[in-house]
Length: 319
Image (cartoon, rainbow, N blue to C red; front, side, top):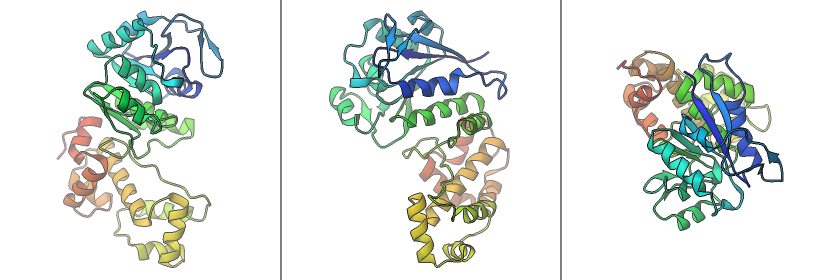
């Protein structure tokens, strides 16, 4: 049965964040999965709805749609509205109580906060608005330095493009990483960005501001199972280690070895999701050498041990 997704719009909903929800869930991508989503635009208050910038939206569904939605998306709103209609707040509370998954993008978190759904929970929003969220709703554990966070089937994301990361993450949870990656490729965005604290987000392969590092990155990815060193990378690029570090920092914002570690973790994530290989074998294929090294780095960067990650995304039981 298809997952029923409802995107709620109110006066002041921002166009970009609403479009993100539609782009990921609203376009028919049944070629990727027979269980593709059923998408509905829901008016959170009497319409027509005037989005940010003056665009009028005739939302075809009312709040009754939230009684049967499996996933509810609340996009960002301008001015973090304090006059959220009580019927919408009540509908969101009822949806959460019956087990619906609720996700906000950017300042949509303020609507969830006004409904009381974030009290006692971890949540995030755009870093500019995070102090205001914490001040107005002190019962929320606001985490301003992550792309998105989940607590009790409620997902909140940071600003703008972080909503893409969150929506793709939901696809990944529902339909698997291959489908999520296919959607990301269609949208011409990375499948995931590193979210920081204990988030199930893998790091995209960064590309430099120039193409000079491209061949080196491709070579390193093809040889992740080898014990690559900084000297190995510099030798392959035919530059000094100092020059390589400078170019890497300028082009990717990180060091060669930190990038390499991130790619090893990403390789391990893919293998945990898509194979039954034991952790010891995955450690070798990803270049960690030993299972102990894999567990140490994986847990630090992803936030959970490898087997817990596998159970979350695949239900695998291989040891």
